[in-house]
Image (cartoon, rainbow, N blue to C red; front, side, top):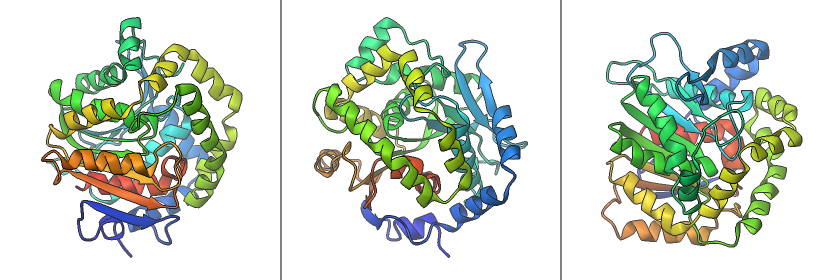
Length: 342
């Protein structure tokens, strides 16, 4: 029996390694996984339907996983990966993240559990309405135009403190979100990002896109290793045609995101996030073609030149690919839980 801290980084080192797939998950994640597998799927889906919201001021579609008595001032903010809106699949992940956070006792100063705001990536269902000028900013590597409308929504809901979590392309948005939140008067409690795609100055986006697409074939294995039946079934219900429609709905902005991926802009966003004083946990896999280890090592070397060593931790998951750190829901929720506790 072990917690996320004991399994992932018992000594509190600045850089640690774990083996994938894990022989044992943290107690809290195993408890939630068992709860999901014994629950009536229709009841879970009904809860997800009530969590789906549309902001009346901006039209943004999002999810809010909240229970009576949850904090009104603090929240966990989840940013979705590429072209994934507030679907059952991703709202289900938000629910799992919340359940694990509740299990570890992640509370506000009043002892209340935190809700999870679940924000979709650019897609038809997220309806971000990013302007042409802001799309140009994204193309130059500034993901703030995607993050700011969501943060403003959270602020208007009365939230003043956030813990940001995200994987894959959502992690690039989360980096910008942490820096922007501080400028918007929102305190950043922590930031946990997995499989950052914008940490290397890489080949043209037409070569990067196939690298992303190649990981789609690994999703089933990641879901199977996660062992939660609901997510496997929800994945089966997702169609390639439906996903393509989501991509096409925001084709210009999605193209801009790929064009904007670069190590220099990622490092700038990361330094801005570190200046908030928030602890940052970066997670990567050794078998991920999108975030090569040479780029990860360079990122950590870059950070070492600044005085942020106590705030920045890296977790290397040996044997994990890009999909493993996004679609193995108990694992990524456990890693997020670790980040929340820093």
